[in-house]
Image (cartoon, rainbow, N blue to C red; front, side):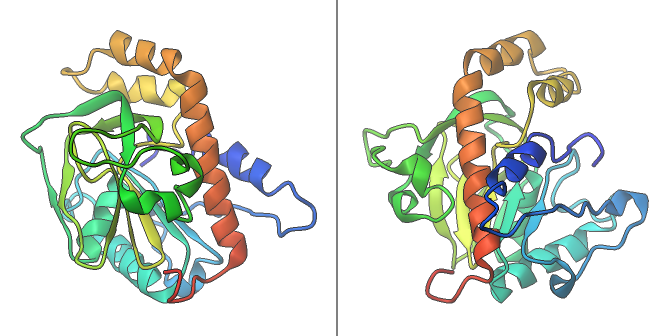
Amino acid sequence: MPSVPTDRFVPWLADASADRLRPTLSLHIVRPWAGEPVPTVDECGAGLLVLGGQQDAYDDVASPWLPATRDLLAAAAAAGLPTLGICLGAQLLAVATGGRVQVAAPPGRESGVVGIRPRPAAAQDQLLGGLAAGVPAEHPGSAGVLAMMPSMHADAIVELPESAVWLASSTLYPFQAFRVGSAWGVQFHPEVSLETFTAWAELHDEVDTDDVVAQFREHAAEIEHGGRSIAAAFASLVREGSLTPATA
């Protein structure tokens, strides 16, 4: 949606591709809400990034491009195309590959800046491993914090696909990050700026905008560190090309 832009990932991906000895990354933005067709896997170039939105993962009537987006995500995960789904993008990936999303999940909206806790598989993961290195994984009774990340969602992934690798959780919702095939899904927003996050908060009566903005300002350096790390790791995956079955 127009209100959920690529945001800080634009300069961060550019920074990650500044090495002249490696291929430069360029973004091609597809706007299906404006009538642009959802591409096929063969039309996606070297990678795929699916962003968030205010609709839910099953809202095919109001957002008739969602079935094609789910099909694309499933195909990308199976084809070895490096793929990242963020928030709604992660939920669409989960549904497309056999998981389940609950609309208006009973725990309520997760808003503000949340601590993302690594699961045991995170330390060796190609996307999150840099952040998870040295952080105690989630076990009964204890867990470290992989990153402090902005969050703004009321729907939630409640079942992962059978083939998924569970990578991270939060206090309110367990499935904050996962991988299926060559595709990663993150429920949080590593790409978001303070300006965009403030605009989201103002859309929801149940969200205290001043409070979540204060949280963002308090954790600004940690948020940027985590977002840059994820952008750089994804850029590396895209540069490396299709993921083999051994790494997918």
